[in-house]
Length: 486
Image (cartoon, rainbow, N blue to C red):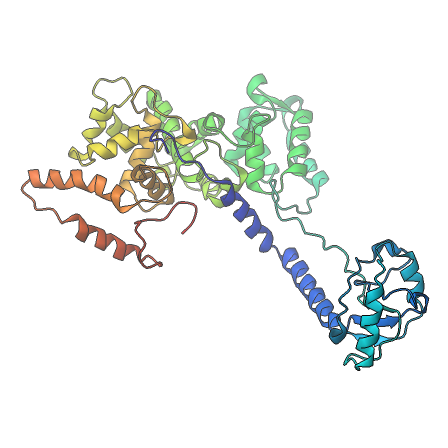
């Protein structure tokens, strides 16, 4: 894999996710249990299914062997004829009705030698019963069970629930009735959001989804039409939030889709009143929070947040907490103003020329040169760029720096682990080998020697790494696992 080509998730990961979701569904488990019960019942009945029955119409012509279930009105359903009757596995019984089946079967072949074989077998006293001249061997089995219905297990809009849409619309109508001309402005959307049963800071997404961003206000009819559609198609908070912010024709939220929501948080949250006095800090705050949202939620690195990713994250819970938490700095997951200050200040320290771009030399000064030049080369190679886009000018923007700093400061998060894993996986095969570890360790060893510090031999370091990883397969030569499996 080329160094500049970013890793992308494989299809198997998604298929496995859907299969596990289907398998864990209660309806699926009940259907599988019922199917296994039917299979056991059919298997128990199959032990006595082989029968040999007399066919008087076939006397003097040939011995006819027909395997499979009896033809019920349609002889074309009988199976092909064989000439090696399994005498020892079935019961032999007299059945005159087989003559009609034998005449109508289109798969019957005549073999005179088979009749002699049958007579000789009967003369020797076959162990399975009496054998008469003109035999038709059938397997008596009941009709196959009806096809099992696979229950639905994938709900992109959330698992459907019973919602009284008319009652929900009536609550919205009562709120709009208090506004002049039944039109709501942005300042009125807090009451509308509560009438819809949504958190307070959903007011901006609701306002813009109904077209308020273009006209400055929302009519009751426009809003009710939009909200009724959302209630009928989206059945959980994640699907509703995405539906309110997503662009038409898209299947996920992009970074610019969060701008109306975050702008409203900046304008109305009491903990961000500081930004009213320093308006030039608003844009960095919104940019930083946007990158923190995608860093935590967008685990696929696709640049688009899907409903599934939003459900698996804690983002919507943090949005709900904004309403009851006046101190924004306690919202450490996404919205902390103190964290934003630290990130912006570190970026400004490295950006000596003020062009809002960092090159390899600028990043090399981070933490007094703690990051090796080989690792910096990997960071700028495009291995950790979301969406598969490399850095064409060899520089890093503010958004990429946020991802770097979050991964550097806390290496325990899933995204941080993947960030550094991608950097160390030089060939992009999904495994970090000892050769790749040695590639990065060699430079650090030379830097330690330059400081008169004796480095630990790589062999000893590798043994410690392998011991910490506790590899399950003896003799494994790689020191890590791919992001798609153990």
